[in-house]
Figure 1 (tube, rainbow, N blue to C red):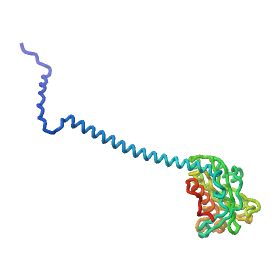
Figure 2: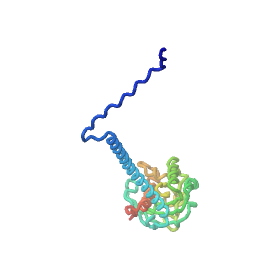
Figure 3: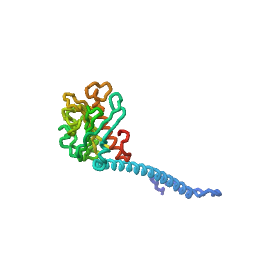
Length: 285
C-alpha cells in the first residue's frame, strides 16, 4: 500500500551548534566585555547629565538672583520718599556743565519745597487720568530759579502704588501715544510765595518733561517758565525745545534745558541711591 504524502515537506533537522572556539590567553569572555562597555556608556551619559544639570542650575540661580535684586531695588524705591533727606532729593543749590543752550553751564537755587502730599491738583486733568492706573502713594516737589532769577522750574517725584508690570504698561502707553508731548497733559507748577516763583502759574508754563520709570515705582517730571509772570508763550515739550536748531521762545530762553537737566538729575539721584551708589555728587555745587 503506498505511503500517504505529507502536505509540506518536513523541516530540515536543526544543525548541531558549532564547536566553541578555544579561548585566547588574556582575552575577556564576550559577556564580561559587553557588560563593561555598557557600564562605561552609562557612566558617560550620567556624567554629561550631571554637568548639564549643574550648568543649568547655576544659570537659573544666577537669573533668579538678578531678578530678586531688581525686585528689592524696586521696593526700596517705593520707600525713598520718607527715608532720603530732602536735601538729597532736592539740593539747595545745583550746578551742571553743558546743561544750557550751546553747552553752557547752568546754576539753580532752590526757592521752596512743597509739603509732601497726594496728587490732587498737581496735574492737568487729562494727565491725572493718564497717571491714575499706577496710583499715587506720595508726591514731592521743589521749585528752583536760575542764577538770573528770570526762569523758574518745578521738579516733581510721584511715587506710585504700581508694580513693575504696571509701570512698564504706563511707560509703553506714554511712548506709543506720545502723552509726554501733549500740551494738554502737563504737570502744574509749585509757586512758593515771597520768592521769584510766586507768580509761576499754569498760564506761565513754557516747557516740561515727564519720565515714567520702570525700574522704580516713580514718575519724575519738571515744568519750567518765566519768572516775570508773562503769558502767551506756546508751551513746548523739553525734548523739542532742546533739539538742535530749535528757535521757539522756550528753546532760545533755555527753558527746555532747565526742565531736562533738573528732571534728569533727580532720576539719576534716585537710581544711584537705590543701587547703593550714593548721591549724585556731580550735579551739586
